[in-house]
Structures are given as C-alpha cells and as structure tokens.
Image (cartoon, rainbow, N blue to C red; front, side, top):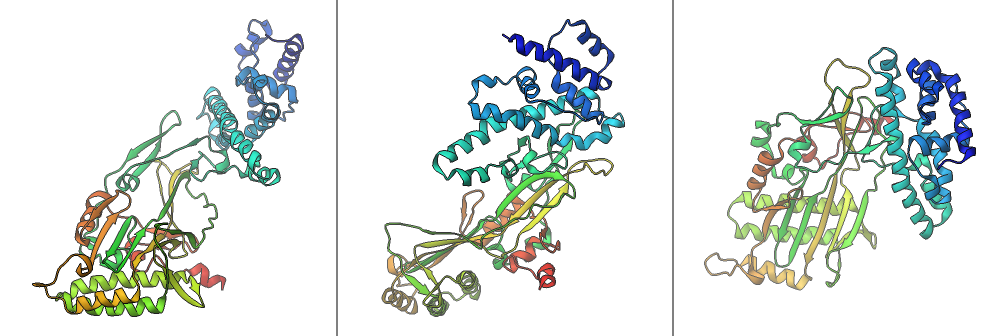
Amino acid sequence: METDKETHLESNINSNLSNNCSSGINKAQVTSKKKGKDSKFCGLRKCFSALVDRKQVNLELEVLRLMLRKELNFSLENFEPILANMLPYLLVYYIKNWPGWQKSVEYYSGNITFQMWYDKFHKFITIKLNEAINVHYKEAMAEFRKENPLDTQKKYMLKKIVDHNTQTDNLAPKTMASFTIEISSEPVLLNTIVFTDSSDGDVILKQHGVLEWDRKVTDTITLKQLISWPHVGVHLVSPIFSFTRRNLHEFRRHISLVGTPLTPISVEFIEEIKVLNSQMSRSAFTLDYLKKMTREYLNQLRVVYTSPAIVNAFQTVIDEFLVDVEELNIQRNGQPTMANNTSVLFNISKCIYFRNKKLSKGIPSRYDIGYTEVIIPKIETALCVLENEKEVDAYLAHLKNFNSETSLTTGICALPQITFSCSYCQKNFDNGGHIANHLKDEHKMEQPLVCTRCKHPFPALDLSSVRWKHECIYSSRVK
C-alpha cells in the first residue's frame, strides 16, 4: 500500500512531467490524467517522451525510485540495501545509453511509432536491470567475499562489464547488450548463417545454401594443409615415440553493425602447459635430440615401407611437430626443449583473423547488421610418449631388421601409425583421405579470413599451408 508521502510525491511528479513533456503524449492520455481516473504512475514514459522531444530532463532520486517501483515492478524494499541504492543510478545509466537512440532518424521520419519505440525502450531497460541484479551484482558480491575489494571494484565498474559473446543492435558498445546469442551446431550451419530484420524489429536466424568445397580444394589439398585445417587433429603412435597435434582454433562470434570496428584483442602466445598423466614421469628432450632421433626413425621407416608416399606422410607430420617445438622455444639450459607427457596450447601464428558478412537485406544503410567471426589460430601440440635412449635404439634396431613375413606387429615391434580426428565432431579417421571427405561432406569450405591488423584477406587453404602466418603489411609499416 502506498504511503501518503509517496502518493503526494507521485502526484507532484506527474504534474511536473506532464507540463514538461505533454508534447510527446497524445491528448487522450493527457485528458485521462487530468480526470484523475487512472492513478498509475507514468514517469518513465513521460521522461522518454521529453527526451524524444530533445528536452532537458532533471530527475530526483525519489522520482527514479518511483519509476523502478511503479513501471518496472522492482520491489526495492526486498533488495539488499546496497543493491536498492544502486538501482536508480543504473536506471539513469541505461536510459542514457539505450542503443535505440540511434534510431531517432527513423522515428522523426515516421517509420517508427512512438508506442513501438517506447516498448523497445522499456524492454531494454527491464532486461538490463534484471541482468544487473541477477548476474553482475551476484558475481560482484561473490568476488568481494574472496578477493581484494579494491580489485573487485575495478573489475566490476559499469564500463568493465563486458561479455564478448553478447551482441547489441545499433552502435552502442557491447556493454549495452540486452541479450546473448549462443549457436551450437555443426560448422556447416555457422558458415552459412544469416540474420535478417523482421517487420517488428526482431532478428530472425536463417540459413543460406550450403557452400560446397571448391573442386580445386578437393583435388589439391595437401597433407600439410590438412593437418593445419581448423578442427583437425593428427596423431602419430608407436611403442617408443608418440605425439599429437590438434587445431583448436578459437572462434569468437558476435553481431554488430556493418563497419563497426573490432575491439582490440590481446592473446598470449603460450596459453596453457599441462601434464597429460600425473601418474607418469616426465623428462625434457632438447630440440637437437628430437631432430636426430626422428631422422634415424624416418631412415628405418624407409626400410619398412617401400612406398615413398607413406614415408613422406610420416616426414610431413613429424616436421610440423618439430617446428612446433622450435617456435615454442621453451628453453632449458639455453636450448629449446619439449617434455614427454606434456601438452602445450599456443597461438601458432601470433596472428588474429576475422571474417564478416552483411546479414540484412534491402537497400544498404548505416543500420545493416553484420555477423563477425574472430578466429585465433591455436595448436595443441603434445609429446605423449618418448622412451629413454636405450629403448629407442632397440626399437630402431627392430625396424632396421624388419621383415613383413617374420616380424611381429605388436608390442615392441608394432609399426607406427598415423590417425586423424575431428575435434568438432569428436570423430576419428584412419587416414587423411577419410577425414578430407568428412570435411567436404560435413563442414564444407572455410571462408576467407582477414588479418585484424593489415586488413588483407587470405584463403584458409593458403593460411593452412604456412602455419597461419602471413607477411603482415601493418607490422612492416610499424617497423
């Protein structure tokens, strides 16, 4: 039940706001208020009307509290005091930063009715305040209880509340996003996704025709390109030497206006180093030793396999692994090393790419929606097994004396194998041809990518052949 003080305050506010913003409300509404038949407070609506008419609006704290109670249905008395005191200021913040203000030209030209525009404004305010109450405030309080309060305060300043997965309509920064879109599906959909505006202003998700792999890709893709393709993993397994390389490219996706600049992205070169099996021991091996050992390894494989293509496949996969170790440059005693039973996740090219496409149809305008993918090329390289030098020598001796008719293919005499996997689908393949067909049938063609620095476009096929590196014009210009 309202107190006399609140009722009196509401009456004064209605009267003042009616005088200030009556030009934005139709006569029927004003008449209704004058008759006093409906005591429903409409301060937020009148404030919106005044701002639409480009009038200056001064709001007292009690006015904001009434807006929260009467029009936004927030029971302030049920909130913690800190949150209740903060909400009026958040209300002002979201009123001021509503992305819809960018559509004022459409309103003044008659393309949007006042009621439609206000409904969107009201919906945005409601969503953002609920988000602040149910998400950001709870997160902040949880952090306050376990972290340094000053550090947490900096972390949860309004301008710092950012989620790179949230999107907004119009030009507002991502902190203004009133919703999050999460799309979980096969890459074939993500490569053909389309958003378009509906008549009521909502966004509709559609799918365009599936992009087929270019015949050139099907006919010419090499093993080196294949093992650097997004979502592809390659695994070499043998009794004394096993490693795996997986492409775990990070994809950050969002919706924004076409032409909106990307937010600067900072990525660590080495993101994670972890032990594969805590029950197993680890030993570090220098790059020189790995090169010497694998050279002898390949020489013995030439005895086992008469087909040069098979040996070349082993050579290609091993060479890429050795380049990983060299580029990681994790030094011990001044030399690049790699430990067995260890994996390293790193930004293979030290580059970041993106691609986007216009998703809205019709005549181009500054409100065209774009779908953006930011791609951070990442490789997880892992030296799973490398036995001591004595066992390695024994295995190489077995390979040297290998005889297909008399030699066993299990235990210490087991021949090495190369297999492939799709990390997106969690499927395994016993040869490169099978996974190539899988990519062609299930995931289709990867679209060209653009460097975030020099803005030069590159086909995914070309980047996969050079470990996702390129001669960045921006870098050379900076130097």
